[in-house]
Image 1 (spheres, rainbow, N blue to C red):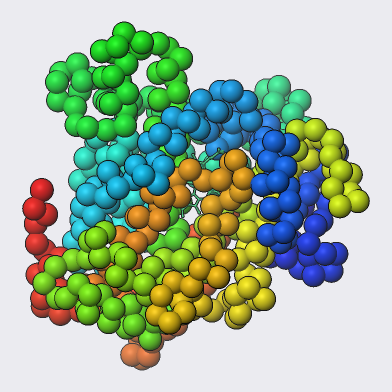
Image 2: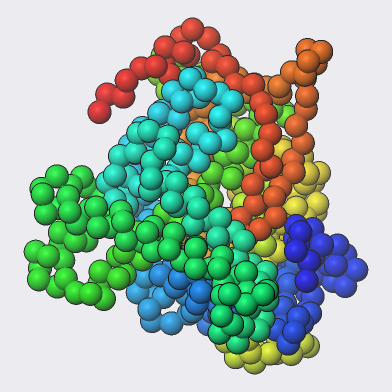
Length: 465
Ligand code: HEM
């Protein structure tokens, strides 16, 4: 089983064997789908049979990620979490969070001014702070917030153990009974450490909100709303608390780190493609002008920026292999027998890098989404980047808003360019994604400078709220 950038290996296999590939590792079947026809046939048209998740003894059993909607089996408990998640993050709801997104993006612009070299970290901080406010009403100001440090640590665990088969115990579940002190049981010691980090992530901010409610100092948030409503109506039960706690922590775990990768790729693209950057800035200058930052109301008048949002989602993928679905019952499809329990992965990378659909797929080209200056509905939308069928990412609307805010506000006030070497020549960064369930650009340098004195004044302006 390929471990490093598996999506590229599968993409090569598709060219040899066709767009559907099956293999087994120690008796576990894996089916990899390499085209939107295949993913639509199985994940959409047969969603009842392809919406389960594979049991991951390492991640769920040993590391304690069972509260996370992303990894739940397809059952009523998942449905209940999914409904709660949907109620809070559907397309008609996310506008509620726009003031938080704009405020945190503006705070990000200020941090960039103070320390532009740390941009990768500032991006991460901006999203963590956004989610903390939306879910718990916690306002994060400093850069060393304990909730954020803890979550970053927890997410390291997902990235390492989130792809089925990364740890042997996923293939041989009986290994979970091996005592931690035994030679070769390093995975158990790792799991015990991550479990503690996860429990802290689940409990600590939640308990903080409860305490604030008791003291009458809570801010509006997803968790506070549920706790208050439930208490008033007398329906507050342990089960309900588990759903809300899990939903909030999932939003944090699944949301705080994913869009980050997309924004980091956007910075990389800007350092690589100065002409495209200028085009985006020219559009903002003509629509928004120099005296204010872009808002969400401007969005429909900024087709080039919207094309950049789409292209950023397509170009370097946050989850190039998606998250594995599992087939619940034996199935027959297009002459193939697909056994129950097969892990089915849609290779998102292959679909969004299909040269027939996206010519020169390795290039960052927002123009591919436009026709006569407007978004061309005929180009296959990059929603595939958010997965498939009934398990499609329910945070995609929130993410889309955050990505828009980051791109529009950053371009309105900053120039991003490649760094200079000792001889004063630009060093051009290249895309180099990390492996893992979530992929990020490997750390790179770029120069980030305010576009003008007026831009600097806008960055320093206080928010009106
Ligand atoms: C660029 C940003 C993001 C990307 C690329 C992304 C991608 C994905 C993918 C590929 C899946 C798996 C879908 C499948 O199984 O087919 C997923 C699931 C999920 N995402 Fe996201 N996501 C992003 C942002 C977010 C945000 C901001 C949130 C929360 C606020 C979120 C919450 C979730 C949840 C809860 C699931 C699990 C859904 C389920 O299993 O039923 N995601 N995401």
